[in-house]
Length: 162
Image (cartoon, rainbow, N blue to C red):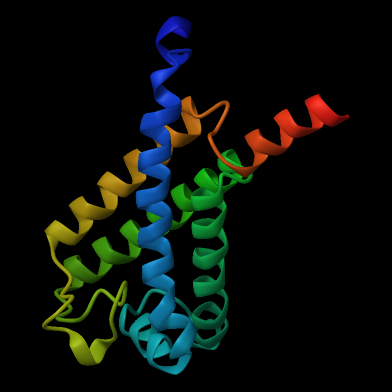
């Protein structure tokens, strides 16, 4: 098992996965950061958070998505970013499952607002998509020990110049 985890090819595969996941999270946060009031309506529509926490959640979550997306793209604190992505994906999947079981007809709120429900409706396919992103974040967490990115570059630079 250690030989499999130590395979050097994981660094390159993980880089592609990280760039993809980072891009997904950066794309997902853009609308939410620009229109937090619209995202708050999307969050409230899920009916899974206490009403008093909806606005705070709608203000904070997009910045966490942005932060983790940048971390993954740049190759900074990959394990921490992967853990954050995993936590978000699990919570998104729980909220999405709850909404599907309740039979709510709504937008996912992932990349667009409730106003664009026809462009981003919730479905079991949305849940499957989120599960794939969860598996990708687990892959990065488990195998990306020497991530290609800023941290690796800084480590090598310090070794040469330190």
